[in-house]
Image (cartoon, rainbow, N blue to C red; front, side, top):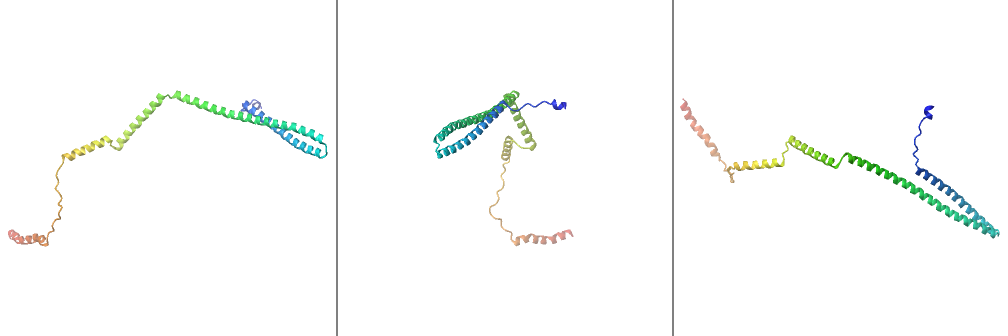
Length: 207
């Protein structure tokens, strides 16, 4: 029980602007109810004035219409007051929105200022330079590991190839342009006949 009664109440989130808007809306609603009641009464009095004219009571009808005219003027003033209240409510609500936007901008501005205090322009430039240096260094390591030659290395290789080509400039025989004549069957058989003719002489020498 002590904890229940000793509990602290939460701070109310209702602002003075919210209270003002609520009061204005309540006044507007009361004026609208009055406007509705006057409108019904005017219609009733108009029918009554018509009935008095039909009954030949012109003076009473005229007096009733004068009263109706006065109430018409009150009804018009009521309409103007309702419009003013609604306009005021809209202005306050829009001002609340603007205040929230300004508060948000202020918070963002303070956040940016604190971030600028933590990191200056010189720090940003230094970090960017260090990042570029690290990137270049990593790229060089990757090229070395992958065996990639730079443009300077490519130029050196081409120059060395040109030098070797100039040192070993040897004239090679030209390929004949005319077709080679075919060997006849008799010419192909001539070595075989010579070998058969010389074979007895070789046998005699061996004996």
